[in-house]
Image (cartoon, rainbow, N blue to C red; front, side, top):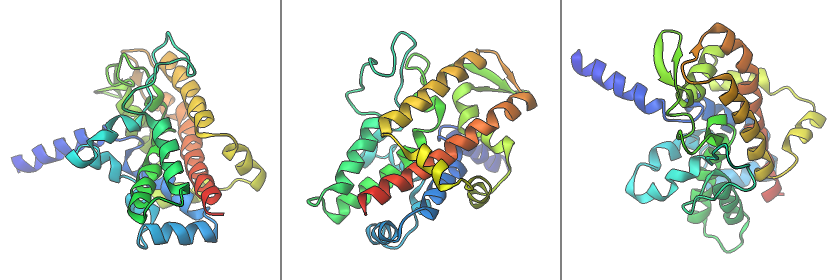
Length: 256
């Protein structure tokens, strides 16, 4: 029994490091899958050997901690301290969520890339485009994207990054990832076109602006409860939906 509780605690700590929780990434991937054109769906299925984008949605969170893919550790975020703007912040030489997104798009668009290279690029893209829409993944360098900002979620001590990874999302709706898609994915073609216009830099810049609002609203020591969940759940809904629609848009553009 003691071993069970130790393992459970370890699992909770590990999941707290994942953006949007596993369910959130699954929801982004599933929304994207529902919006793929036939050409894109066929190409994605061929590259992934028939597996769904949802199957690979959380793969990179684990892979980044293995020796073979340790080079992707910085690809989940783009940290910007308050003295900089999105446009003049120093770039991480190891890469960030925006450069990683653009690199995977380039590989998937290349006629010279092998199927193996494209499969890896697609698995990475499915994940990092989800990460790009989690505000604390465009958080500050000095506090590790909110990981050092201590808050309380009801009576539990935690940090700002962790509550945005999972606590707020999962408290707002106890949905499965398919229910997230079914409940949110109801926009008109005109509304979808508005969300998907622009570039990955534009999308990341929008998330960065949300991150600044989050920091202002959640200073260290904030006690997060029902009011905060109610206020920020619509933002989470919008970011999950936007991530999925934009992932589909990128893939549909590549595989016209």
